[in-house]
Length: 387
Figure 1 (tube, rainbow, N blue to C red):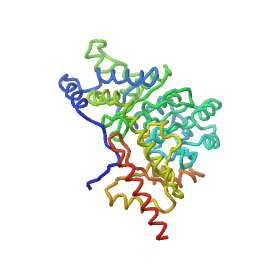
Figure 2 (figure 1 turned 30 degrees about the horizontal axis):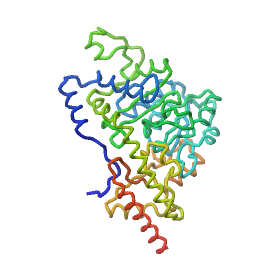
Figure 3 (figure 1 turned 180 degrees about the vertical axis):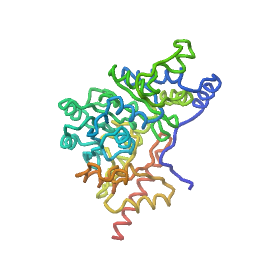
Figure 4 (figure 1 turned 90 degrees about the vertical axis):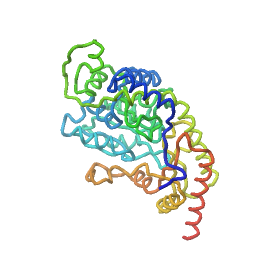
């Protein structure tokens, strides 16, 4: 289908082409100097001691759980949102732990609810995973206080939130507040290299485990041996092959430099959405994080519509060439998670029935926002008349 407005589009240009070409010309494609430069720059931007580039965001989450030794007991549980992509829950089960799903704060603040986390903590809780939905901060002060009281480590799924500070946490970057932060550079993310991810921490002990887990538990990398810094290696634990290659790192270095301006453009578009929907004053219609449009990375542009209207709105928008999506179908309703600890997720389930993800990316023109909002208004008004 030829879309007039696609949901997301990466910002790739001559700089990325030149960086990829230079990497190919160098003759070194696997993890090497470009990856290390990317890790150093990412750590500096986020004010964190350790950053480890990995194959993708799912690998980042897997390593985070493994580094914390979650799943070492058959009864281990991980509290996390059901309103998220399935990766964290899949990795929880992969390490041998049980996902315990908590509800969101509200339909317009769809991040994990600290009060619901508190209700679900048991002696088996080994970690809490939070996800900064759309690049807007969870209630980290409350979550961290709760986690510290119970001595439970927090993993931040910051895949939507590279480069974003949390003003309510003294300006610390999202992903650097908990024990470990995880990022994704998939093609629809705020910065991309096609696939790719990052694991960050300030904990030296965890950093040693993350580094080893990333590459088969080995003490040195091929690049180290190529440079003559090592001639052999030991294997200190059972790890994975989750390395990022230098070709993707070459793209990521360019994208990281663009990230501040890309995020700023996304915020401006999110603000335009929020103001346009606010001006309509349509019953049952709310732009997600409308009151914080300028305080996030605006990875997702999501609107809540009245119960029963979502599918019709999406269908008509598609007829008009406007691509939409859903962020997210609740994880606990997937077949693979039948029987999970998922009682009392009313807000999550309601949001999943009413939310629509709209086009939002730096190259989207301002006029597209006005057109999309006007289209939704006309559809909802026609639905109201028909009812």
